[in-house]
Every structure is written in structure tokens, then in C-alpha cells.
Image 1 (cartoon, rainbow, N blue to C red):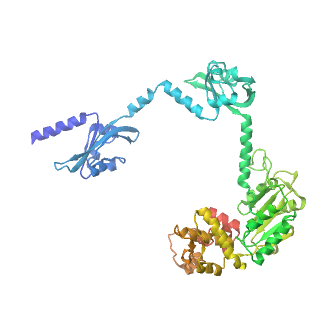
Image 2: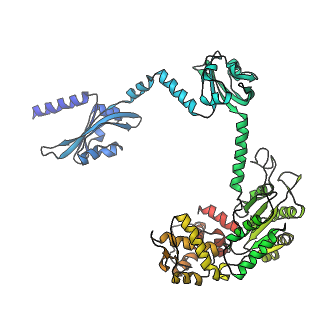
Image 3: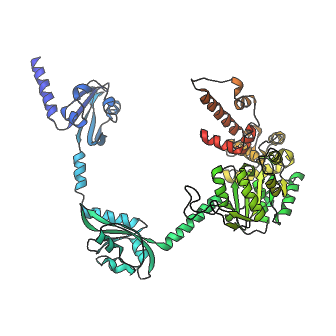
Length: 576
């Protein structure tokens, strides 16, 4: 017994003398060995971790995995806190070869890694730096403390027009065509300079130069400059402005031939639109959401003699505080955050063309007054300015609201109503022209086949009959949504839409209960306040309304009998 105890002590001394860390676990993954080197590397006292599960002590350990798989993992890198170790993990087996434990042998290689980083050659670092500056599109020039060229990149040679050998080991003034060398100014003053204009190279290229001193351990070692082509900056500015306008602008892309249907109601609306298109008259498109008011606006513009842009503005989607400046533009300093130099508004962008004001009833009375001035005087005044700017814009407005009721209630100016209502065009709802449903189905299927990569030919008789019976509160937009969902539910290879492919049309009892709040059904109280309960209920109602409207926000607002702007605000509030 004494001899065995002495031998155990010797083994313990030997294991503690080893510089590598040793950790052993038994067949249950509990730590049975944690030598002194392991304590030092891990920063943990061995007496406190013995008997604990190894993954509780070392979160990213793999010893328990080695124990489970019985496979060794040799020379693996592992991160422990702020140190890096190199470890080998092997299973311990009994005489039958079954794993009864596992051992990890590891050592701290953080110092080795740091040493390897320190001994990286200066030449390799220089090559890396050279590749980095060559990879950038900015023209870069570096000189030493005496103003002698050290390094340039390919963008520099392309911009300035000088070869590498004409600049390297040459004075900093070698590329100056007009002006003082910014490198030399930096070396004299030991401070940075920004946007210094000059002309450089044989072609006397106009450039702007940013330069800064290179200071190492408090000692000036040189200067680095980034050279910008002024003409490129001007081009990029024009491209940026063009991109901004393209984002805001929607080119007219539909003509009257794209309006599908042979019903008398639709043909009357098309014929009236054709007649008014060639005149400068203001037009207001009236009709429910989803009937195709925007399509009519496109077609009117395309048929007109106007050569300018077709610009679409959804008045409900722009916050009230921004709508005036977006429509009429603003001058520099007009308000906090105003862009330097000001900005043109939609009316100026559409000058010579057509401005389509969708959801016209969502504009405030103040903006209504300014819109009336534009229609009467054919000029706009930017926000923050008093100088009128003439514009030649044909206005097409659209709304699904009861304008006459809004005028009676004082929510819409009567003088603006009469200015807009010069040529009202009423677009029929789909339930008023159900004879057009087969034609629309044929057209929409062709469109969806292109978009979805399918080959659906038609609908079965019973499926078409179901569509003909439905009342279509969402109009053509809802019909397209229904057919799209039906096509998605079909298997590839199926070419006919059957009744079972169609989604449920309209709200059933369950849907009505959900939409109306369930009349008390499904209510749960989680110790919320009254306001929290109200918010939860309101969010659920909004979600149900949007689902029923197929995501159509205008339709959802109509169902809830709230303004579209209120709906937008609530959607933003609840993150829907």
C-alpha cells in the first residue's frame, strides 16, 4: 500500500513537471486529471475542476466528442480565452478496446504566433502594401522625407499619364503641371492638406489632392497623397443625381392596348381616356383600389404629345412633414437636414411631362393650397424660397375615396376639387364587368407563366365558374393574387388550374372571427396594462386585415375605415 502511494506521488510529480498541459476525463466526461501546466494555461485551479464535466469547464472542448467517437484528433488549434493552444486529443481504451476515458495534451503557442508575426520580413510587408494600394481605384503617391518618389499605384499612372520609372526616385515636383507640390507642403509643415486643386501630368489633368505626413515614432518619414480626378467626381455626382431620380421616377410603360376587357363600362373609360390624352387637361381617375388607375395614367401619358418624364408619386407613402418639400423642392437651409444647394421637387422633374399623384386625398390642406396654385398659375415655389419657378406639367390625380363627401366634410378643398375634376374618369370595378374575367385570366396566366417559368394553359370550367361568382373586393389586383397563389400550389407538369388549386375566396366564419377580434374568443391575459392589451388587439386586427387584403394596404385601410396614412403609421409602429 505504501509502495503504491509512493508510486502515485511520483506519477503526480512527473505530470506536474511536464510543460505541456494534461487533462483527462473518465467514461462519463468528468475531469480526473488537471496538471499544473493545465492550471497555468487555463488559469483554473485543478482542485476546483476535478470531478466536473469537462464541457462545463472548457466550453469549446472536444474531449467529450473524442470520448464518444473513439477517434483521435491530433495537432488541433484551439482558442482558450486570450491564448491559442495546440492540442492533441486521444481516447483511453480498456483491454477490450472500448473507450473508458480521454486525454488532451496541449501547449500554449501564443508566443510562437506572436514571434512568427514579428519575424515577418520587411520585404513581404512591402510587397503586401504594394498590392493593397494597387488594388484600390484611388491614385496614390508616396514620397520619402526628402520628397523623393517611393511608391505609386497603377491608378496613379493611368490618371497622371506618367510611367513608374518617370516618378520613382524622382523629385515630388516631377508630375506638377501647374501649382505647388502638396507633398513638399506636407513635408515642410508636417500637417495634412485636403482638396488642394492643381494640374498634373503631361495632359495637365485637373485634380484635387489630399495628402498627409507619414510619422513613425515621432519622426517624419515621408508623405502620402491621394489624387482625385475632378472630371470623374463631376461625372459621379451626375450619376448619383441620375440614380436618385431613377429611384423616384417611374417611366411610363403601358399603353391602352394593355388594358384588358371588352365590357361596355371599361371601353367607355378607355375611350374617354383616349380623347383626353391628346389635350392638356387635368385628369382625375376615380375607382376602387386594384382597378388599374395607374395603368390608365401610364396609357394617357404615352398617348399624349408630352415628351417629358412620367413621374409617379404615392401621396400616402410620403410622411406629411416631407411631402411638401418632395413635391415642390427646397432651397439650401430651408430646414434641418436640407441638402446643400437645395433640391428639385417632383414638379420640376416632371416638367414637360406628366405628374401622377396617386392617393391625392392624403395630402394636407396646406399642400392642397400650394397644389391649387400650381394648377392655376403653372408655377411652383420651393420650400424656403419666395421666387416662383415656371413648370409645364400635366397632372393626373387618382383616388378611391369619396371626394364629394370629403369636400362636404371640409377635409378636401372645394376649389382644388373643381380644378382636379376637369375630366373625371370612372374606372369600373371587376364585379361591374365580370364578363371580362375570362380575358383577364388568360392574360394574367401568360404573364405569370413568364414570371414563374410555368406552362399553365387555362382553368377548368368549375374553377372559372368560381371566379365568375366571386365579388372581387380587391378587383384585378386580387384576381392576379389569386391566380398566382393557385399556380404556386400546382405541381410542375400540371397545365390546368383546378378548383382545388384556388385559395379560399372571401372570409369564412373563422376568418371573420379573427378579423373582428374574435368577439372574446381566444383572449388571454398576461398581466398587461390596458394600453398594452389595446396595442396587442390593434396589431392582431391590422395583421388579419392585411392578410385578408392579400397585402394590399389601400384595401386594408378601406376595410378598417381608416385613412391610408394612418394605416402606414400603424404598420410602422408595430413593425408589420
